[in-house]
Structures are given as C-alpha cells and as structure tokens.
Length: 118
Image (tube, rainbow, N blue to C red; front, side):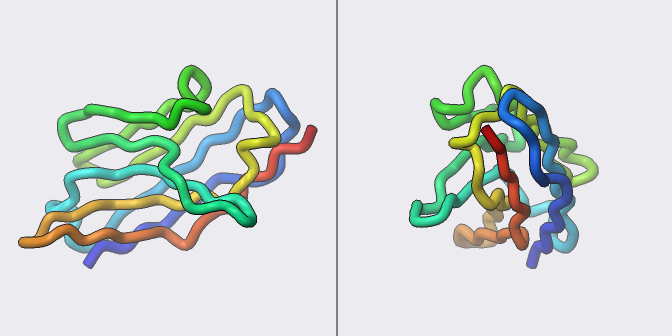
C-alpha cells in the first residue's frame, strides 16, 4: 500500500505560476513511476506529466515548455512546477504512483484544485 498526500494548488491569474507537491508513504520502495494527472469537469482524467525511477519524463503536449516535473526518489516526493498557466489548465490535479508488486498497482492522491482565471 502507498499513500499519497498532495499540497499546493489554488487560484491564479492566467500567466501565473503554481507548484504542486506530493509525498508518498508506505511501500515506497516498490514505486517505479510517479506522475500528475488532471480532470476537468466533463472530461476524462488525463496524464499531465510523469517521471520514472530512472528519471525519464513525459508530458502531455499542451504543457510542454510550461510545466516541469521533478522527483526526489529517496524522499518519495514529486513536484510539478506550472508556469504560464492558462484557463484551460483549470482542473483537479491528482498525484499518481505506479507500483510493481507482482502486478501493476496504482495509487492516487485526494486531488487538489487548480483554477486559472482569465
């Protein structure tokens, strides 16, 4: 079992910045991937950015060049620096951890609201 606790988020004007932070606890040594997903009203949950144990990152196209994901593997934390925010970035953001324990397991944080006003 892995528990994820998020912080950050809030209300910001377009063009502004926010930083999301997520800390994992529990069976953190089985985590091989951590990332951030988001879900806007009426939309499916989508991957925003992720990072593997080896440091490989991936981003959804709409945030490339604006968002940066970073991970402290030893501390089992992951952060998402979001710059040049746009109203389209408004969503609930969820921290995600993928664990291999004989089979793939996924864990989610409780979600944090990000609202970007125009």
